[in-house]
Amino acid sequence: MSDEKIQADSVEPSFTADSSKEAMSDVPADPSGKKLRWAFRKVDVTLLFVVFISNVLNSMDRANLGMAKVAGLEKDTGMTGSDFNVVASIMYPSYLVCMLPSNLALRKFGARFWLSFITVIWGLINMCMAFAKNRTDFILCRLFLGAAESGATPGALMLITLWYPRKMVTSRVALFYSAFAAGAIIGGPIASGIMKITNPRFKSWEWIFFIEGLVTAGFGLIMFFLLADYPDKSWLLKKGEKALMRQRMAEDQAEGGHRAVNMKRLWDHARDPLVYFQALILFSANFGVNTILTFATIIVNQLGYSPSASQAMQAAPGICGFIGILLSRYYPKWLRNHFFSSIFCSTWVIVASVILLATANNGARIFALCLLSFGCFGNVGLGPGWLMSNVGGPTRAAFGGAINVILGGLGGLCTSYIYRNKDAPRYMFGHGMNLFAGLLSMVVATISYVIILRRNKKKETNPIDISHMSEDEKIDLESDHPNFRYVE
Image 1 (tube, rainbow, N blue to C red):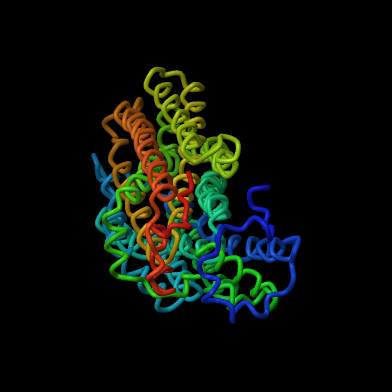
Image 2 (cartoon, helix red, strand yellow):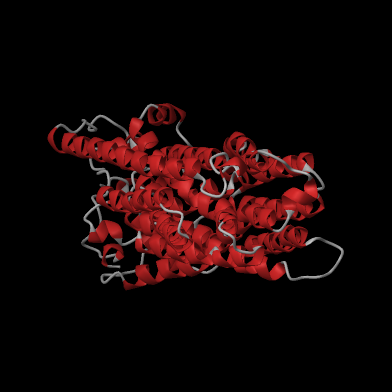
């Protein structure tokens, strides 16, 4: 990962160093950057690993509804017609409404407490779904589930931007989002194994909710002892490593993570079209992601496979998605920038959708689901990473992260209605919507790229005058600072 090597002569121009001289007085000598790289590796195996596992469980808890459907949930609860689609989608309104309050709570109580707390809560809610007897019970559980999960992804993304410099954000965000694919890999086989439990206390689909929810709640308790809000509060890093990280983050204009959100700048960012265009990449990608997580088992089951075989076979597209999202961290290096990388991923989504629309062959359709997973999960790693690499400070990070997850949630909401019972077994409408999402992703990535090129050129030819500004005013400029360059 040569793009992540921390070298003394490769940092970007510093425009926060003057305000941080006193804080940097205890920084140890590290001319080769070896100590700093080791510090970030420690962060990788603690903070990044913890939020990764939390996201794996999040993925499994979202996907278990589709697993339960092929195990008999609809029949046992009396659901008919579009009832299942309503149940699948109902979590997203509360997810979106509660996102801002959850983010505010995270800043008030700290990531260590808040992320642990909501993980325990959504695990308990999943356990409650084992006792649901009808559509109304499931709707209530899913509404509370959306509220509980609303702070998980934006909270984790905010943590990543506070612990890593910008050039390392994309790869870490890709690793974080790869947890969704990892959940798809293991979720199906685990559900298939749980279905073999013969204890009469629960039906097979009820055991899926109960056991997976119990594991999630237990891990939430463990998170409290492993997470830290900021590098300065880390229980693993040594004093010198904390100082080196503080210096590197200051040089990267990320030290502002300790600063309060600037409401005036928040309004400026809210009017910036670039934030929305980049967030639409995740919106588009989530069509494919939610197809794999929630509906892949159902699609395969409609091809004539048994419920347990359909659940186990979800691992195949899950593996392809996991490979796609892991490779996505290298695409900007191999393909020169994020734009061409996103176009590459969207191409696979389009090809997969065309195959699903064009053929009824079982083997070809399962192969197409694998291609769809490879492409959409690649964009899940690229889109948020591209956006969060261009924040420049805490205010834009908070707003950009929230908009990114809101539009991603809207993508999930839309996907809940595109695979309808009446369209089985071909699901032409659902596959057509995935084709549309792939094309939309190409369009918004192109627009984002053009905007970034123009803004970087303007910074070179006509930078704003900051000579009259105070140090705090310079920092609050964030991405508008003349030394800041947008990542292409």
